[in-house]
Image (cartoon, rainbow, N blue to C red; front, side, top):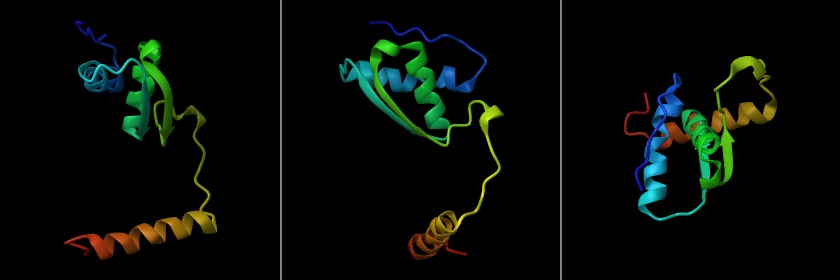
Amino acid sequence: MEIKIKRLPSIWYTSYGVGLAVVEKLSIEKAALVGWSDGACTALALASEFPDRAADVFFFACNMDPSGTKEVEFTDTIKRCFNRHVEDYRRLSPTPD
């Protein structure tokens, strides 16, 4: 099967071809798509263009359309999460400084 990618202005619509190529190569009829940030946008673009190939889409931190964004409220939970990331980076990184 030849895959034809639409050339739309958004980078996410031009980059979902890799994901679709993997689905095709592995003969996956319907894929569960998961993405974070740009990967989320790419998964949504793929699912919108090829809904018959997407079983589900789980996305986080998608920034495709900023109209629904809100200022971040740094709750205690978010502060703990960020602090944990900083601690993990210091512990795991070969260049923690």
